[in-house]
Structure formats: C-alpha cells, structure tokens
Image 1 (cartoon, rainbow, N blue to C red):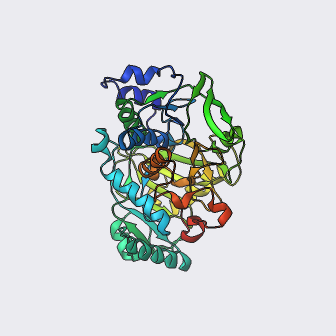
Image 2 (image 1 turned 135 degrees about the horizontal axis):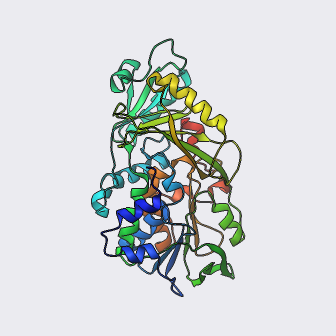
Image 3 (image 1 turned 60 degrees about the vertical axis):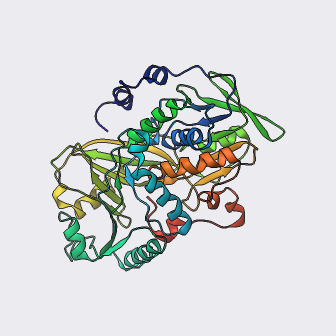
Length: 416
C-alpha cells in the first residue's frame, strides 16, 4: 500500500466504472435476498461473484460494517502459492492458484499477479527433511515444486546470505516458480466490480448485530440498517467469526490473533522473488513501488487490536538482517496488523453450521489471501447447493468431532 488510504485507491480504481456511484454510495438494503454474504473482503466478494457467475444466484447482498476490502485483505503481505503438504490443502490452494493465473482476464481488472517464484528456506536438518518431503508430495499432486541446493539458492537469489558460517545457514530451499505476489486490495476491488456488474448489492457501513433464527433455521439477518430476510447466509469475517457464531448461538474452535506486517522505504529493484523462512519466521518480497514487504508470525496472545507486540517485529528484523545484510540500513516506513482466525490444525473451516442455512468460511490463519479465488469458488458452491464442493469437503466443522484434522502447521512447518 501507498501512503494513500484504501478508500482513495478504490475511488481512483473505480472512477471510470459505470456503476461507480452505486458501488461507492452503497445501495439501501432490500427487504429480502436469496443469499446474504457477511464480510466484503476478498473471500466474501469472491463468494458473491461466483454465486452470480457459476450458479445464477444474483439476488445477493454483501454486507460490510466498514468499507470494501478494508479488513485483512488490505493488511496482508500479498503472497500467492500452492505448495502445501497435505492432499486436501494442495487441492484447494492449487485450484486457487490456477484461478489467480487467469483472474485479471476473468475480472477485466489488473490484480497485478507476479509469478516470480517463492523460496522456503531450510536452516537445519529438520527443515531439509520436511522441505524435500513437501516437494515430493507436491509433485505427486501435480503441483510444481523443486528442491534447491545452497548454491542453487544463491544463484536464484544472489543477495541472500548463504555463507556456511551465517547465523542462520541456508542448507537448501524449496522453490515453486509459479508462486509469487499479487496486489492485495486489487483482488477485492476486481471481484467487487465484477459482482456489482452481475447485480450483486454491495452494502457498506452495515454492521450485523444478530440473526433471525426459528426452529433451527435462519430466516434473516439483523443489521444497523434494518432486518434483511434471507434463507441463506455466508459468514466470511476473518478475525471476528467467533463473534458472529456467538450471535447465532454456537461456538467455533478458533482463536483470533494479531498478525503483523510492514514495509520499508522504497529502493531500486533488488529482490525479484519471495523469500520465506519458517525457522526464523520472516518472509520478504519487493513491491512494484520498491518497498520491501515484510511479514512475521502471529502474536502469541488473543486480541482484536489491529496492532501487535514490538518483540515480534524486533525478532523479525533481526532475522531479516542476518539473511540479507544488504537491508541493514533501511528504514521502516509503515507497520500494521490484521486479525486472523486460527483453527487448532491451522486449516480453514468452510461449510455448514448447526444452524440450517448458515454457513461459515473462516480459520484461514495466515493463508487466507492466496486462497481467495479458490475459497470463493468452493464456498459459493456450498451455499448454492447446500452441500460442500469436493475442494472444501475435508474442511467441514465436523472434522473436529471425527478427528480428521488437516494439520498443515504441524506437518509442513510452514502454513503462511
């Protein structure tokens, strides 16, 4: 992001769009819709778009208590990849990456996808074994993946410190060449414009305060702009899913944590790939404006504050300077924090709830941005058909009863 707000970026982005006044001023909600999506971030807007495009459900309202794309979609580090270990994860993330690859053409809006390659560094024997295991699993699932030796890592990213006596020695790395970055808020506005063109109502400044539930079935949603009747509601409110679940009378096995990121002052092009390190918990890429986009891990405490602890940033910067001594004199320009839902197995929940007609899409943790197209595609199918798509069937709420967890975090050592 620049020093300008997402609001001004959005205004400029939509200034020549024929539906811009309707989008910007937000229509008054109608008394009833076939479906309501709560949350106008990337996942919610993608869901509304695919409901209209793939299933012909155009009587849809997307409700947002703030402004479009103003939550985690505008507060992420833009990484797009699909090199996950488990079959279930690889399937939905790979489908998402394939959608990313044609998304600018699909939406007629430049989401600025840059497939520059993503390195996942290995610093110890465990990292090496896990990295190679993941490469082989990816290849078996048809996902592009390679294992690089330290010399090959140096050739791919020359400014990386790969000296044998480095504090964090690089023993190798996985590489997914099709992975890369995309513009964070562009995907939200691309889906918003495309959904609007298909008749979806995008209603901003409309906070959900309750649900109309009778005999275990949802019949409407209560908002600060009135009650809206509907028989299907999709909740896509990253970081606040447990709050909405509480309003509906059930609990979700998730916790909300701050997730921090930052950008440096802009410099000339020097880093043409994405570098991630799970062991020292730092990941970095360079934006088209020259800023280094830097991310860390989640804070260890629960919070809804969109800021985190200084010690997380301090550790992140220390690791960054060890890996990239060339960056040691750069100044930090901005830092920010999003709120992420984290499941016990660090995988999402996408599907039905105990309330008939109420569906949730949450728990993505640090992996939400890259999943936006695939998540919206599968969630739209689930809402329209009242049954999960094959892509999201393994991520139902019931898995916490059966024990069929998809533990990417514990197995792959990196879940960003």
